[in-house]
Amino acid sequence: MKKTFFIAMLLLSVTFAEAQLNFGIKAGYNSSLSFDNISSVQGGDYNLSNVKSELANGFHAGAFARIFFDKLYVEPELLYSMQKKEYEMTVQDAENQDVSVNELVNFNTIDIPILIGYKVLDLRLVNLRVFAGPKLRLNAGSEISFDNLTDGDGIDKEKLTGEFKNSQIGLEAGAGIDVLMLTLDFRFNLINDIYQATWETSPTTNTNFVISLGWKIF
Image 1 (cartoon, rainbow, N blue to C red):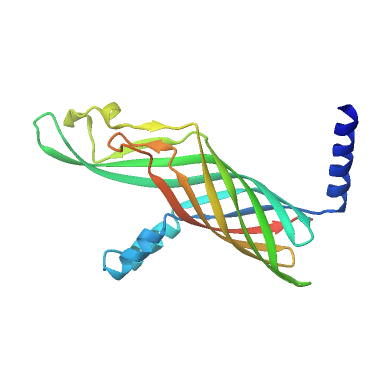
Image 2: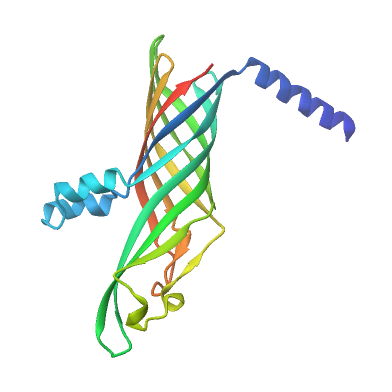
């Protein structure tokens, strides 16, 4: 047993010794712009103002590493992410009158994607990559606030407040381009919201686009 373990660790060490390693930092936008949003443009329900607001509604920053095995690579990342989401609902006040309430959720999360990628184009100064893999999302102090709601309305905020999950697992896929030490990624991720609203019977799927720019330190 010890001999087998020693051989396995030796092979792993040799493999990583032959692999090329990159490490860097990155930052970018988290967007709520999904395929459903884009399809609604044709119906006239979505306009340029909606697109602009959603493209700038989130931010992320962190570090990444890439371990290359020829054109194949593994990329673990550690990112701090901020994103906002607004829920609109109509509730009844103490006088049984309809009141419009906006529930604002500020998502603060730690995202840990582990991506498997491949260099489609591998040139000296430029390369083009495709990748996909799982992503772990951890709640890191997300908060809720209410707009258009005062104490005089007689509405219990606790009854309108849903539940935050500690973690969620999703999928992420996309493409990227590297120019010298710069790296630019375009991603689409599919993951359930860590927030479960009170009127939802199942978690809402948060499908969104992510754009990030990174710098390879080495």
